[in-house]
Amino acid sequence: DIQMTQSPSTLSASVGDRVTITCRASQSISGWLAWYQQKPGKAPKLLIYKASSLEDGVPSRFSGSGSGTEFTLTINSLQPDDFATYYCQQYNTYSWTFGQGTKVEIK
Amino acid sequence: QVQLVESGGGVAQPGRSLRLSCAASGFTFSAYGMHWVRQAPGKGLEWVGGMSYNGSHLNYVDSVKGRFTISRDNSKNTLYLQMNSLRAEDTAVYYCAKSRRAYCSFSTCYGFFDYWGQGTLVTVSS
Image (cartoon, rainbow over all chains, first blue to last red; front, side, top):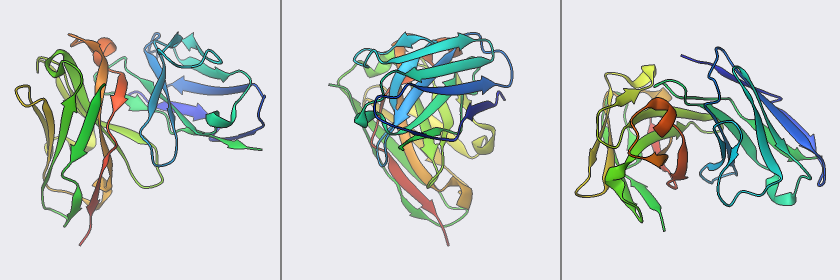
């Protein structure tokens, strides 16, 4: 199976900061990567798919980039609503896998 | 609007069985692949298994192969997860999730999820 590794595991930031989360795949997944946001006690929410395509209704301060084995999620001008845990997920093969998550907390 | 409502969770002893259901509404259920994703308490997300819209592809994570079975009843707009031989490590909130794209059976097409249910908690304990 393809392993997904996110860094950092936890990130402390302030409102207005630019935040970057990295996701690395154990083998090439081309651009078949999605990003999700999850808040405590809630289901995940799709933010980005195909590495850089923004899901409908998601604020433009979220962006994704990368291909092959290295990907990034960037949040420009962090807002209070953005403090949450973020997961990457590869869908290159029929055994889909998530990263372990990155918690973005208030500094 | 799209709604996914899971049910069937609860407490089960190790080795016993449970069946989860996911009732879908607000979209053409038969056109979309559907998945189960779980989250152990305080842990990350783990994809459990998924079925393409037409049933041509049915896949599971290795840890549940031979124990869990996914099925769907398009006439009832319902997805199921039959869980047998339950283990303590199966304890988690189980979410059903809808594939983003319709009429897809390739992994790169139906393998990401735009709507999720609220989840149902399964606890395996003696």
